[in-house]
Length: 257
Image (tube, rainbow, N blue to C red):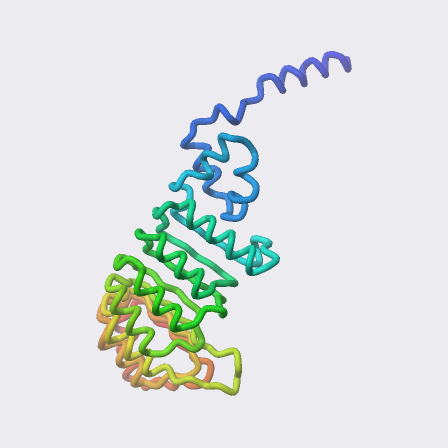
């Protein structure tokens, strides 16, 4: 009886599919679902076929890296990982999202090698400066449609640079909440800069310290295509009732706090 069972088990093993015989397109689709760090560190080391797929620029049109989830013990290792992924894209990168770390130098590396970039998200990247961001944005393709950033000390002039160089920007999210509670910034100048330089916006999120009705009114007047508007102010934001009514009537998704 035991012998028969062993023969049956051996037969099943012999009939098991060889994963290397899987169509290239299907295998690439499966590997594409892995996280960036997994494709670089693990999948590419399995066999020559997987290594070849993982080096295909088509695999790197979208890059998503999280410092904490991807187990990068140092910023230096994370920076090397990001640069490697960007270089493998060979200019085909469309969408990159980084959480936890980015410097002016790293941003410069990304934009110089990403002529087709349309979406850029830099979350919790407090080592990057506002001037470094505005310089980097001067080099991104004019087709950039989405820019989401954390930059507590960004100035209105930096937003002006972004707007002038990214004329097709449809989605803009900026977090300017300072980490030092005794430093308060009024965001009205930033709101005016957005209104004057980003007329094609459909989605806007502003997280800051303080804004007045003047800032919100500037946005309503300068961004006629807004479909969603999310404004969070840590300190003061007392809206005029008529202004709230204008927002509700004009914008599908309006949030404020």
